Length: 599
Image (cartoon, rainbow, N blue to C red):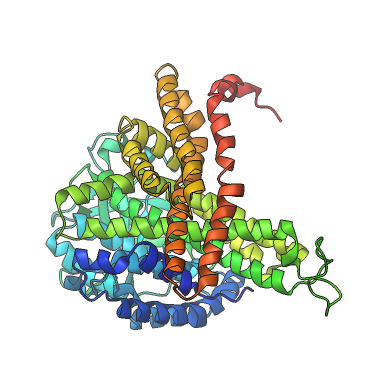
């Protein structure tokens, strides 16, 4: 199994040098988030993830979770690790002090989430889902509900889930059958069944608060009649005290391709007592608070997987001796050279490195936007701008980074050759665990439709234009830079093509709506390559500036510059392939009659 090491140097580069988190936090009023405190938190997080969470990753995958009628049991070591997690206060870090949180920035917490996920994807999901539940109740619950649920969710004594999917309705939530009927005390009785519920049942916490969508009897059909509820596994009084068992039961857990140490349950609601969150028939709007939080979390999982696979592949490539370098012997003391000298191995390693580091910069920049949306001491204009940028880039980050991460984990296996295919090395687990990232919280296809249909065309190009204008302005300001002038010119061409493609799709879709669906995934992937290119462009400029300032650690900055060059030379050009596909339109995609799909 790869020995995970938290990439603290690169995390600090992104937070402190690229994004100037010190000024960002000071501007938003996070007085306690000094560089000294940030360094201390990152240091402790690295120790915890490396020493406590990573060692139970492979064993957890092999053992999996065990279902019984009474409870689902997590793998050996998980319960003890989770207790250490909550005892150390990790769950409280970004939460509101009014409910026991530390009130630190979301973006600082996001970096810790990356470490957790890279060390142990399955474990990270248990507390990870709780943050979405907290955000949803905090944003849409009333004061009594907040007192009932938030303190124990914040301190980690209780955990949360998101219950959307039913056996007959996945993405089409309007087809749901779970019903809710009002009780005399104003609560609701829920009846129905949800599937694919991550962390839906387990033995880590004293209670589980399910955030559930259901249709109140008499409400309209379709998505217009969906309401949102908090449904606890154990009933709760207004003081937040756990009472008797509620009508919530886990019917079974799924046997999955990956994330085997996280219980994915079938959750049955039998006259389960629940509490309406938000307004009647406005549940989907409220649920997007959870979903948007979760989608950024999944983007972080993509970065984590790419980095973990890179670490495992790099260690192997430096040690494994095979053949001699084409340019001459590099290791004369040994019978062969390490495989890292071979160009194709370097291609795979640099792909992993450029995706994970570029993705880390993208996710961190989005997390800072989330910081802005969470505070009150900024202008409404700033909040709107942050929300608009998040609306555009969240589907790109979620879908692009997870698809790219799956490629990176495949490269991780390939670098190890036959050993990569063997379980004991741990590389195949990374690939199995990562595939779910392309599926849950909205598949790549759904994210792509959201980006192109709702965010770009739905805003008549406004959201995209705001972003491309920012990129173009940055390019104009830095086009004479000694370090990045060539990269600026290259990226400018991609940005211009991005806008031209958008206009072309908009025109075609007026005559044939299928053009949107046929173009959406290629459009998103093109957008992802360009967006990561922008991140690398900015990192190159920072690296050059640091070297001009005679900063120490020159090798680190040189590596940044050379990795960026690889990205622009060998990864960014892939976008042209997607552009070519977009230019062909929907005709061939839709030409074959459904009945002619034969086998």
